[in-house]
Length: 195
Image 1: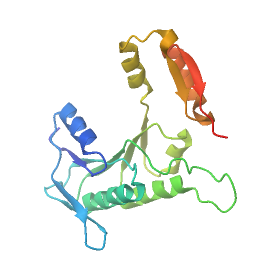
Image 2 (image 1 turned 90 degrees about the horizontal axis):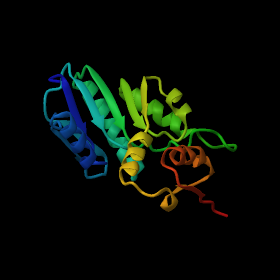
Image 3 (image 1 turned 90 degrees about the vertical axis):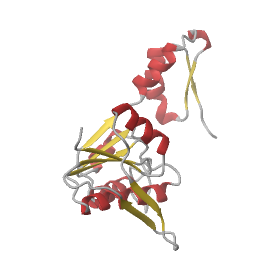
């Protein structure tokens, strides 16, 4: 893995360090910050020419700041002659804006996909997208991973009696996912609605 380089944005340094530790690869040296006017600054502090670079940066809140940092990091790596840049986005912000559900609204998930590809990402790795069709919004390959197997394994290891377990769906759109967990874990289903 000598050609592999991992870099972390500021959104979740703990997750990035855990990934690096698991892979046995140190996190790359990168300086991230802001200019006095609030603009994002980024400098890769090591040679990445010809390397396979993975940028770990969820676009969780503050979504705009974390997204911009990801875009600047991608552009920086391409300009520093990285061979390939993979954007690892465990949480893909703007994913709920994946269709026009009324007039005069944007499809922001597609806009963000365009920005990431245009910035220079060669591949995207993400998890549990709001809707699977978002993969098709990208003009680069997307690896869409699911957390369900890991979550189910964790809760099964706790040996929670089925009669004490409730799987809650936060909205109607998540019922199918909640039913999948219930099928594997047992328990009852609860659906949260707001009136």
